[in-house]
Amino acid sequence: MKQFIKYVLATVAGIIIVGVLFTFTSIIGLVGIAAMGSSTSTVKENSVLVIQLQGSIDERSEENPFANILGNNTLTSQGLDDILEAIKRAKEDDKVKGIYIEAGTFAGAMPATLQSIRNALVDFKKEKKFIVSYGDTYTQGAYYLCSVSDTVIVNPQGMIDWSGLSSNVMYYKDLLEKIGVEMQVVKVGTYKSAVEPFLLNEMSDANREQIETYNGEIWGEMLKAVSKSRGISVAKLNELADSAMLFQETKLYKKEKLVDKIAYSDAIPQTIANMMNLDSPDDYHTLTVSDLASAAASKPKGTSGNIIAVYYAVGGIVDEAASGFSQEPEIVGKTVAKDLQELADDDDVKAVVLRVNSGGGSAYASEQIWHQVMNIKTNKPIVVSMGDMAASGGYYISCAANYIFAEPTTITGSIGIFGMFPNAGTLLNDKLGIHFSTVKTNEMSDFGDISRPFTERERAIAQQYVNRGYDLFTKRCADGRKMKQADIKKIGEGRVWTGLHAKQLGLVDELGGLDQAIEKAKHLAKIDDASVLSYPAKSSIFDNLLNEANGSSYADTQLKQALGEYYNIFSDIKNIHQRTGIQANLPYFLMFNL
Image (cartoon, rainbow, N blue to C red):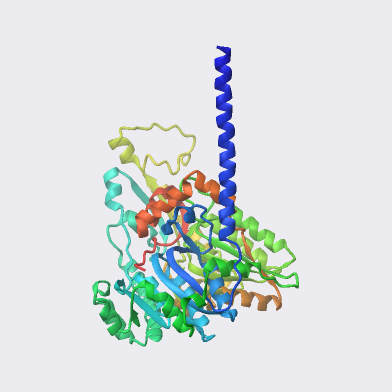
């Protein structure tokens, strides 16, 4: 028996040791693969930057250690930061002669992200360098980007989606009634329609008005850009959008000047060679976005010791970090406030650029971040660069900055506050047969009890609290923008504006992207030479390996792939508990058919 136990223990120990060694070896191998993939490439004469439009485009790149191993492009999440840096580097390097854009399995991006990339491509062409694009199928967002090309090519059996914009809002009122849940809502703002999906079955007139306005302005920006690049009138582009272009023959695309050439993908290398006046595709070299982005990251920084800190505030604004499957970025109030305080105290940091891409969230967390923005302003300038969204709480944390930039298609404003408190009494009592008996010492001891509705006094107290929150929000905006609070309230009301409209209203100072914000920060800090450093640090390869190992990131990515544009709605329902209480959030999730 002793021998048997000894052999069993020895076998178990051997399995454990082998498992540990295998895991260690696998990690080293994965790190090696990642290292090879991220190594800096030498830029050779006659080089072409290849931009593959696949997966999604997020604010910042994050390494997915399994994407390349599994060969699954849908797992790819490209960083806007890397794409813009690569285009900038390609423009500045005389060895890079052009850009080739491949419109692949592109999941899309928000309008402001697409606009910032397109603007960078337009700027690239100022150096008299070429851009060629090819697509089997162009999504509308991909075509908007690729239309800037000197030569647009489509597969003979390919498709182009050019149909205009639509936004969809999903409503849950009947669903909640069926399961016996009532959302008790208190809000300020006629247009603060975040609560509408829980109370109505269709859009309110106010909500429809603001959606029609910003959709029209964003579509107008797209029309203007494509019209200029392709030499097609805006009226004609609208006519084509009404013609179900996705299902038309490719010869019509060429006839209407949407494309320049109809060809299979194997014709692309020679086409590029011809653009470079080379005899053979063997005479040019290709570079990826990561090649040029990593090369830019490795180049010498400023020598003065001065730092311009670019701090990325991306995602929903929350009091505490979320747990569970989702690996979506978040703006955790305590963490961001602490980081900003450290930047304020760092004497080497001469100015801060706060890059905001958020639809808002917790009003309390937004106030804490606002406080740290004010703290930075006491001894150094802070400039805000708005990305896709800087709305509601996203605008709250932006409004105190010395200067604010937004893209014309940025979604901003939404100055309003709401509170949602679920009453699940019908579900618990009538449907599930669960009943409660309460003992309390004071009238308000069980305020917010989900097993019963508000009393009139409780609802009045909640509404007063929201009113005070709105008054504070509008005061913060008025002080930051040097406007009268009454004027802020007129353009507030929870209404969403594009960056284009927000500039006219005085909510932002200038239309532009991150590069312009950095230059403005240097100007305000009165410095010429500085290192531009990004904060917070990106997740390490080991962090991402751990996330993948527990399946959370992979599961999240697969859900995104399966649900597409409806992923945000699913995530919203899952995290509904985080939206109870007082919120400064977008009126709904924005869904564009890009």
